[in-house]
Amino acid sequence: MKTLIIILSILLSSDMIAEESMEKEKDYIYKLKLVPRLIDENVWTKRDNEIVREHFERLEDDTESGKVILAGRTLNSDSTQFGIVIFKAKDEKEAEQYMNDDPAVKNKIMTAELFPFMTALIRK
Image (cartoon, rainbow, N blue to C red; front, side):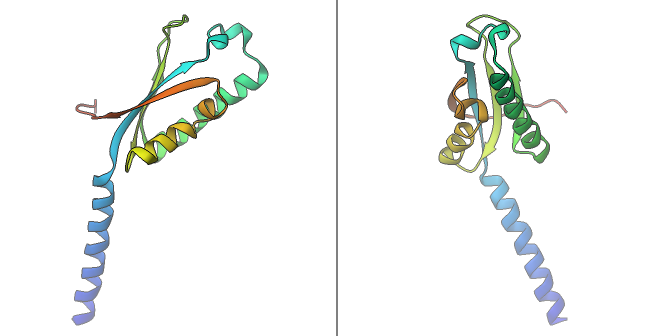
């Protein structure tokens, strides 16, 4: 009986720790802008396309794992176009690191700006 109580206590405390760490995550959003030379997709190099593919695959993987809530871009093809990524991070430092590790940002084909964010509603 004592062993059962200890096992249950361990299981409950590990669940509580997991819940606490999930609760501590906050939402962040970063806004992406293509560098001006890439606004016209017809001038993209093979390397530019590879970087965008890496950027997309990372977001796809992180969406599947639950880190990314939403990612997308506007469809206009002028200097006002932008993309957004809404994601989870434990704090601003982690959020900034995540944004800066985006292959498009790291390879300087997109600029990014980070904001704390609160997801209020999401479609089921």
